[in-house]
Length: 310
Image: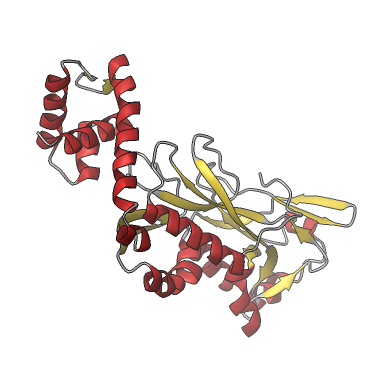
């Protein structure tokens, strides 16, 4: 029995609650993972897990052992990355998940710089706007906009997206130009709805001008759950949109999008990079987080006047 493999298998079963899911994330067979855990229990002469046909639960002894195993695995990783070569050149696979427009417009175009610094890091990137189960899907970190509802995650505030309101010329020709944000509540106007993954519903937008403050829900004929689809719908004239600068700039410059309510301000949207509390921050994860911070400082610097995003 390889004790390192056995401890890794045990820890992943605890984290995923399943031998099958643990095997998938470790790229092993379920039989191998099962045998490793059984061999570990035999060596320790302690039952670490209670197994039923439906679920796997950690025992009291297993929970205590799990905490020690996490520290041992972290120390082992530190020992490897503390070597001068490894510290200077982090390596290995990093699993990340990022919003679709952010990936297409900011992150992926900037990756040549990242690989010039860290050529030995392999990024497996999920590109989505859905809620990701970091533990069960074995994801090292996610980049997300808006308030983080999962308080168990460790999150770093890396930037703030300035939001503005836009419509395509074809929309304005058909529906007219709204003079006040509240006009978007009338039947004479439409917005493009964005379905937030944590609620499955469009969120209202808070806008203010001096002492005047309004909350706009709007009426939509189309609502989508993907940022790129949201932008495409707006460009097609299907409704008014709220967009961050990085998504709107090129289209505003060509006249494909027209800004609205320019004397109104919206609260900026916070951006976070988050990872599980029991996930050791390896050298490769640490440099990726630092690089994201640098990237956001250029594209979405922190807004000291930002109010709470709900």
